[in-house]
Length: 355
Image (tube, rainbow, N blue to C red; front, side, top):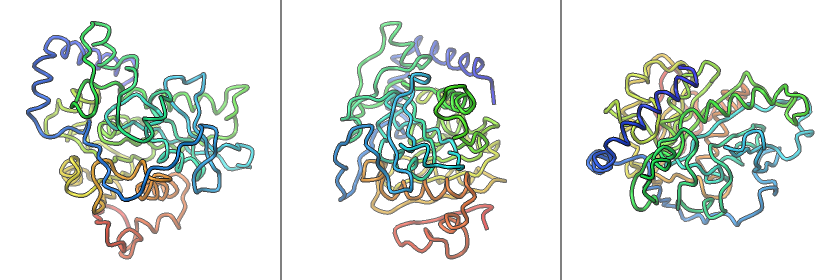
């Protein structure tokens, strides 16, 4: 994995290119395959959960979890069990998450990430906590993160206001923010005075991302500290420059061949704008455990904003319990001819290098 300063340099070069030809870039966005930046419509009969305050514990796991800001990582949002003392000798594996639309709003996948944390994980999302409206609908991108293409455009007075409904714009986040989250967690695990001393398992780290964030997760998964990868409603483009343009990430078809961690790909049905990307990625990835599944009657927006993150959160929890905690019961969701998801009519499964 390229060093963080090196990654910043790559991003800076990309931003300069965008500044030189912003009109052409925006025009090109509309002429290629559908973007993984918007179209997050959720086709579900389930209503969003009622709003509760960040400090209200939630989730179906044994450790009801909260959402909070941490002064040491103000650029992100942390999800963790409310009662850390209740963990006993158990330590929390680390899950870092990049948002859909590359938005910089750490609460935009609140229910999905809270559910994960309630099963004994710390989940860290890119972006600070924004207004509660972002927990229920895709309606904004937040403020550009330092080092992002949107931040550079804003500094040059060239950032055009955008909404998901109005189409794509420059990324408000970067893949480097996922690495920032890992670095922070590792330091907190031993920092004197930290509430996380003795509570984090820094040997067990997952990177995940949805849509545009999935491209950023594909990039960050090449960090040698990462043990597993989750790509949600996303996939690499045939155009090697595409991920850099829309996600400030290095995620190409060629880079898929250099993945060396167990990998999970989940999408909605064929109406999901990312369906074809994910299907094609499956053919390119070799040599690592790979699980690919899609769910019927589910669009690009997945089930993230359903109570407790819906069916997608159940899959995420199962995968993380297996990959980061070695839970063999959870493994049965994915392994064997009669795997749990294989038996569910609404799920369609493909696998490589899995028993």
